[in-house]
Every structure is written in structure tokens, then in C-alpha cells.
Length: 447
Image 1 (cartoon, rainbow, N blue to C red):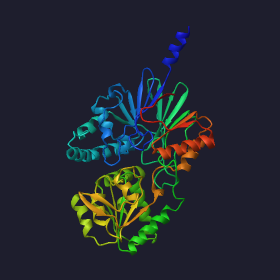
Image 2 (cartoon, rainbow, N blue to C red):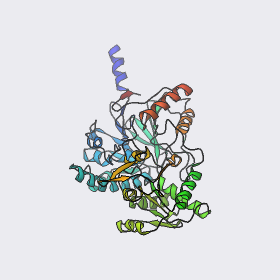
Image 3 (cartoon, rainbow, N blue to C red):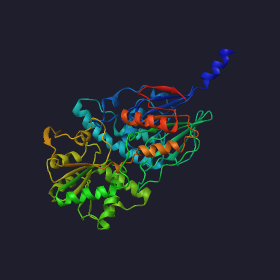
Image 4 (cartoon, helix red, strand yellow):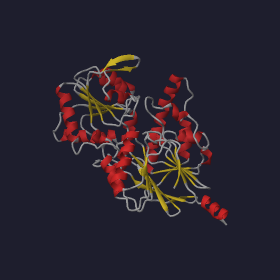
């Protein structure tokens, strides 16, 4: 009789495993499984000093062919970047995301193949995946509207608006009378492009991001801070360089700067969006948000390499927005090589900079950096405005948990450096009495 009860218990056991973004920010990958069904949530690249860290190339700690369904929270590469690798190595199930994430995801993944090819050639490695592998993934991909229910084995899943970037969603999965919510990245308050993060009824568990779990963004001062940086750089007749991620950060900055120019708050400087990926992504934003970014004043879109080179001929002051957001590659590096030594210019950091990344070294005060094999002194002004982050800060994350705390049994904090995650762990325990942990890579827990 005792053995029979134990057998029934084992059959009903559901396991959650953490295979990325565990006490680190990148590499999002979580496996939820029972005795019959396996669901993967996110499958992102590990990133830091390289676009594609070596850990991204390692074999998966599970059999991709055993995964029944895959859910993607949003299109950022640290959440989506290993999807073609997953398909290449045997995954044959369905890929689910919101429709906007499907469009942005294809754009981001196809763009990444060029970077991966360059890195593979430079490092003497095999390329991680090709455009053909992305196409194979797209054939398995299905766009779901928010709250549309999908059943996979004994699990039932729905998307809820995360408010992070266009198409971003939280995945709520119901099983055995419980509800586990994978938040992906939760949006910052006050975004002019996205709705507020949606509330979810009766969650049992959160797998929640904690990128800014140990600090808060500037309270309502981000527009004034940006205005000040632009004005001061203009007065010095310098170049304002803004490394920005192609999704959300770029589109919000364009909107804010255009509105300030229209309102006469800053000089009418020429603005160059020097990123083919950002330009293509902005077109998708126009489609879903009905905003005409391409009609903004003084805006120039540098799609080709020749267009990018012509920016050098334009006299300062001027504003250049280019990828990548952490200066780990892309056209921003060419502008940094040219203007980092210029004491009149400014490098404005508005994105999270991962430890070891090129941008993080500059943010932390490096006197010089190596760019394209040459030593480049950093004499320009370096400014940081975290308020333009698309991530929620500590207070917003705390309030999100507090508003759901009546039913929450446990919170798993992911997507944060150890200091950020563990600081928020302590605060949620101390002030809300919610059982909270920051799991490590490879941890598997019963839920």
C-alpha cells in the first residue's frame, strides 16, 4: 500500500530545472516537465565579452528531441538566440510566441547569423547555425494572441503582456491546480511605447527576472537627464554616441528625442540611426504601434555600409545611435574608435552592460580600450542613464510580487548578477514573507 502511494506521488511530480540565466543575466533557459511531457521556456545565448560566449556552443543538458513544446517570452537574443541550435539538434515540436515576437524573432535570429559567421571565422570554430536553420525554426513557429490557451500534455499555457518590449509576454502555465509564471523580462514603468505589465490571477510560483534587483532607476528624471547630455554635448560641438539595443531602447529614444526637438527643448541636431537591424525592427514597430518613426525631424537612416561611412563627413554636433547595446560588435565600435578619444564627445550608456562586455569596461572607468587591434584612449565624457532601461527596477519588481503575494508559494529569481538577485531575495523574504531563492545553473526542483 505504501509503495502504491509513493508510485502515485512520483507520477504527479512536476520538476523545474534552470539551464541558464541563473545568478547571471543571459542564457535564459528553463525546463518544466512531468513524467510524460517536457516544456522549454526560452533558449537564449550566453553573452558577455563576445556576442556568442563559448557556453552557447556547449551541448544542451537535455535531449532537444525530447522537448514537446517551446515557449518564447520575447525576441532578445539572450532569450531566443539558441532556438536554431535547438532545432538543428533535434527539436521537432511547436514554437509559441506572440505574433510580434515571431516577426522580431526571425529578424533578430537572421541578423545574428552574420555575427556568428564572423566570430566562427575569427575563432576557428564551426558556425553555430545558418539562415537555413533559422528557416527550419520558423516552420515550427506559431504566433499566439495574449490569453489564448494552448494545451501540452497535462499543462495549459497562456501569454500575458510583460510590458518589456514589443511582443514581450509572460508565460503562465497551469498544472495540477497550480500556476507557474515565467515573467521573461518585466517592463520598466513609464514606457511611452508599451502598456504596463499585466497582473495575473492566482499565481503559485514566479520565475522572475532580477536584472535591477539591487537598485532603482532615476525617478522621472530620465528625460531631463537626456536633455542635459544632448545640450552639453552640443555646446562642446561633440558627437553623442548611444550604443542601443535594436528593440525598444532605440525606438523609445527616437521618440523622446524627436519630441524634445519638436518642443524646442534641444537643438535641431542631425540624428543617425546607424543600424540595419534597428531600421528593420523599427518598421515592425511602426506596423504594430501605428507610430511613424521614419517621419521624425532631422532623422537619417544608415542602411548600407556606405551610408554609415558618410556619417564621418557630417560635422559635429550630431547624434549617432548604433548597435550593439553592450558594444560587443556592430557599427557602434567604429564610432567609438573615432570619438572615444575626443574630450568634446559623449558616450551615453542607456542599456544594461553585462560583466566582461566592452561597454561595461568603459562604464567602469577604463582609461583606454583595445579596438580593432589598436589601443584607443577614453577621453570623452561617459554618461549613464538607467531610466531608459526596458527592465523593471527593484521597486517595480518588489511591487509586482507584493501585488500577487496572497497566492504565491515561492519565487525563483533569475536574470540577475548574484548581487542583484540575492539583494532582492532578501528584500522579498524580509518585507513580504515570500519564500524566495536565486537558483544556480543546473538546479532542479519539484514544484
